[in-house]
Image (cartoon, rainbow over all chains, first blue to last red; front, side, top):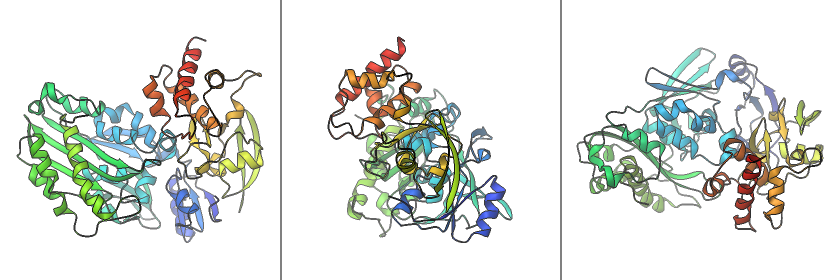
Length: 316
Length: 157
């Protein structure tokens, strides 16, 4: 199925792309095209002009610096998943990237495009939210950095202005201590370390993500992400975020508060996850794949799974 | 809007003028006559249209022809060399890795990239690597067998 017709321009630089955005009304940026082209084919988006930024190598690449991973907007999910720098600095990010879509989607889809699309259930939205990352944008008046809490304005709406372009994403690294248990687990998702070690050995930051995906497209329906800062098997503090429930990724302060100071036992994790409904309000998304009631019921389960995986207590 | 593009497909360079909205899969099939690449779901889920662009597999139904400007594209027609089938094609033949054949071109293209990245995969890794390719006939068993046989053939060649 073809998209509606559009004018096509190829940008030779970020500055040129910004200029083109200013000149062409109703224009959209085309990166990997894995969010925009499907929308256009369904006539859910009909931009008059596409500005192709796919050739801008300046927007590609990964650099770890100053406690953050800097990921160029055009970096693909596959490149992020395979990056040894990312695997080392934040195994949660590498693992999530490797679980997006399928091989072909990861070869083309970009982190900048994914965030610009702002699907309420996007893997990156939930992960960057739990990691308290930020998004770099450039416009006619220069560059600015938008904290992730201000980035998502609604379903498919962001704080990026019409004449701005996302240039990169910053994600804090995970801080590890002691025996590096968190690192090991993050790279070795799904294996059960818990029975031998017990949660009492965990110190430092451990993160995990659990999701329920559409069976054919693998697009997440509901996702739950956690980062637990542990000391000797006790939760010092925790960050929890969910996607696919309300129009934007949402932090879960009630769950975070319930976990803080607690011993990391399966029972305590479950009790904390069950606080999630306090953080969601009434405006739960529902669609043909999953009704609002279903999402409300499943979300705490995904959060609980993410927590159990994070500390190595998951059963398979 | 017509846009000039220049790209290499299966080692042969092409200069074409395409409508900006032409999808790569339509360009390959309708303009170049390379109908080995199939259109299945048309929504980047089934993998019937998988080709390689600059070495990486992609779903050519979710890529504009203009995005392939300057690229090297390989389709199923470009795998055989000097009249000899590619080892993955041979292995599909030997192991009967297909029934109706509609998904086969995409399966084979995906497996060529999989084996480039991981020359000695386990059956489980092959199954995971085929997550983006759907077959509605075979239950995947012989496809996985073919991929493993191809891996062995390539390693020992």
